[in-house]
Image (cartoon, rainbow, N blue to C red; front, side, top):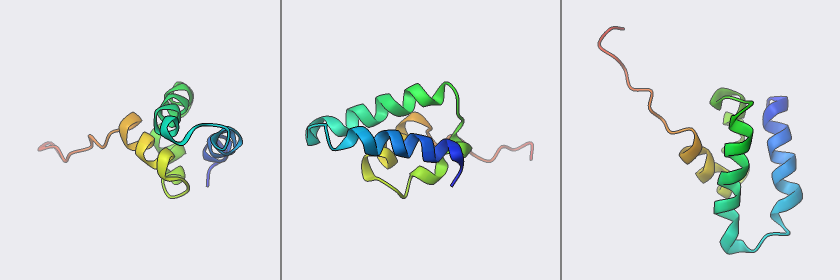
Length: 72
């Protein structure tokens, strides 16, 4: 796991248990949007298997738009 992913995961684990369950998906997404200003999808990809709320947020913040192009 990259140090960037570890940072995001540590921040999330610090605040997660203090949040109401219903708000966690929305706040996880907000946290990832904040970190997306500094880190790219590849640096944070390993968080996907660590927490379900972060995984869902990752899919929304970093959508999989890598479709094969005809040029390749």
